[in-house]
Length: 115
Length: 117
Image 1 (cartoon, chains in turn purple, cyan):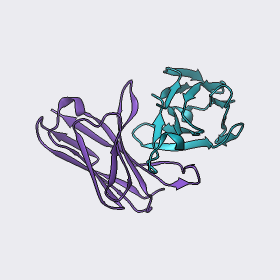
Image 2 (cartoon, chains in turn blue, brown):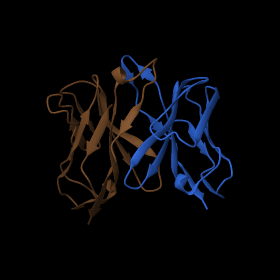
Image 3 (tube, chains in turn cyan, blue):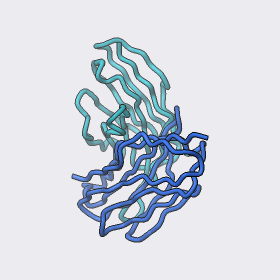
């Protein structure tokens, strides 16, 4: 199995509080992604990183920020959590090869509930 | 932008039935195509992939052929088992829709498959 770990695995938090989710990899892959998974929407990209301190927005980035200060860690922060951010969050990693990507490896997910 | 459309679920089949899950895509360039599977309570894992036209990806009895002329990558299996019950995602990565090496994976919404004995 690819070395990718998400923490925490489950979290319940109150509306308006800040929350940080962590993704840690041991594969030295360049690309890291944060997705959220919701019924009827599949996987939607929140933010991604293509190198240390190189990040960009995905399709549902409002209310989220990210940081990547070293290759192995990619942090997702909800500055002020809202109930609409209740979801399952997945981190993924991949590497470029030629003109494309290798397969993406996914973490086990973090179930976040905002009450 | 790029997009992936896959058939709505859920799909319920009897054991040993034939499975097809349709997937079509739109892409700016010449994408690589993937099928991922998600078992209950787990993250996604790669099932198979294809990187150029007419390539056939296969794994665990599943197959999909990259059809550039119809922009499709349909997933098939000749005889499903109860253990195949999962959610299946079609995805693409398109290097021409990426800037400065910012490769992205675009996913379909997923198709839930239930196989009953």
